[in-house]
Length: 487
Image (cartoon, rainbow, N blue to C red; front, side, top):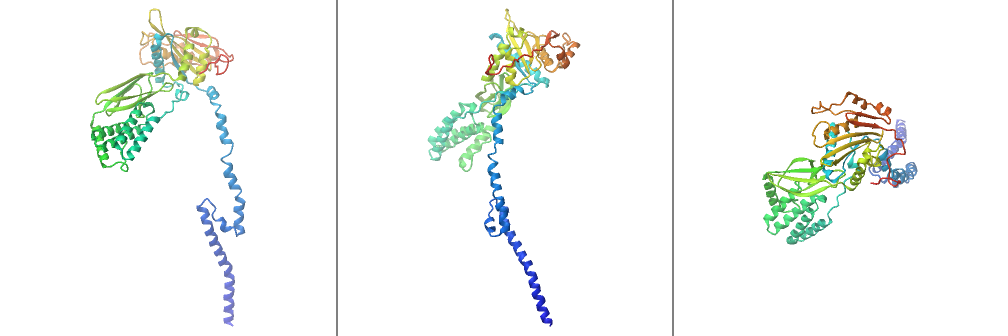
């Protein structure tokens, strides 16, 4: 009896445990099937699950959705369409932008007054810039620098030299690398320092294979001057190249440095040596190891200047240049010349060229500093400024180039312009008790004055501040309209 009961109990336990064991086995099997899917984006587990209806349904329902999302995202028209529409917007957007920037132009009324116009423009610009509360137009945005053109001729010579070097023809290689270096140097504005350094490095290696140790050392020195961080790759050059290169580097480091001095007209240009910014003009002294260097001078709105100069040990090397206006800025200067004539300064209306300049440069204020010679050959200047937003005008600011300070000086004229632009007089670093600004000038700083003084000229300290109510069709002609000004 007990044996029968024991057998029944064991049989019942086996029957009850079978489903649990089967379920555990299925869970382990499912876990094994899901791991590959988690580690791979491609659903490799799907073929294994095709025979199991519960696991097959989700891939079938998800399959149409995932490909659609993947194929629709790249071709969604919203993202590409926006840039296409914006491509036509920049000119109107620039005109409408709420800028408070000022554009300043020196205008010579005679060729003999050209230098004085440039100096007066520079004085006013520096004086306003030192105040720290005047925003100038962004010439870098208006006139982006030209892209480097490269040097295909030099690149081709380098490739020919490299082919000769790889073919164990050091004589031909040295000739080609030397010609390539000369071609690179002839165009410093398009020079890539690392490419020139690589050219000199291969030239030196070729000369060293020919037994010309002195020539190799000179080429390695030129390579270091072109690119100081350059080092010969041990996978390409042998121990002899490594040794002579190190000797050249040690001798170069032992030489006393020279000084590079750069002056430009106008000032404020960036100076690049080997493509690296070393300061702005006037550059008093950049310390450099003796040797030849590519020097570039860059100023927005002006044609870039580039040259190759030799810096000598323990001596200054000066680069002096007058930058020429780029075509776009030249057109603006021509417009400023028309707006800076005596007749235009005497006229009551706003010259259309002033509005066109403001529109092109996204400026609120336009300042013109006209210079001229009188019958006795003495130089004079006259400064006027316009607020194209409010139609206010500053006139009657005269400059006597014989005065260095006080009323009539260029600094005094710049102070008057500053008061017009900001409504605040500049703090004076010098005594001007003879010509102080009267207390009534403070009224010119109040916005309500300009609103109430429509058509009225306020005179103070010999300067006329004019507010007009010219609300006509506008004085900002755009390209393509009759009588418009084109830049």
